[in-house]
Image (cartoon, rainbow, N blue to C red; front, top):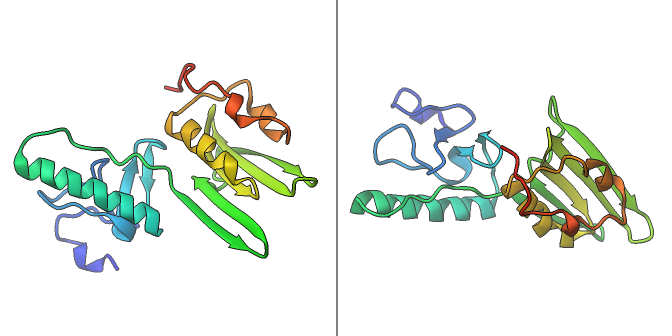
Length: 179
């Protein structure tokens, strides 16, 4: 419920909008968790992520930035997390990483390996990986997070994402990054 914050100096949309340091537009007030609509430095748009892990990490970053502000010294910490959500149901482990939705202007490719019983769907904006759905291939989660967080250009290899035998760890993370 964000109604109580409207007309109080806060920018309210899906939540209370905050910058990358989780500061609201009202002096010395930060927001974290389900109510925070934060600026994603990774995806360059506002996001609301309503899961426990994201709220926990946002709370930590907001707390660090509050202390830095109150002390008047130190370096502020941007919130630059990749959201993830995992669940095991009916014998399958399903994980959503990043912005795992097919939005306008976004492309996606899938790969499946019936022998290993895994499925993955990857979402791209331009030459960047921005999201994925992983079923029974949890070991790829960390690699995908690194590619997204590093804003790594995957131009020239997006077709390989369709190949179930393609090892995602072979993508050169330290090569030229997008933007």
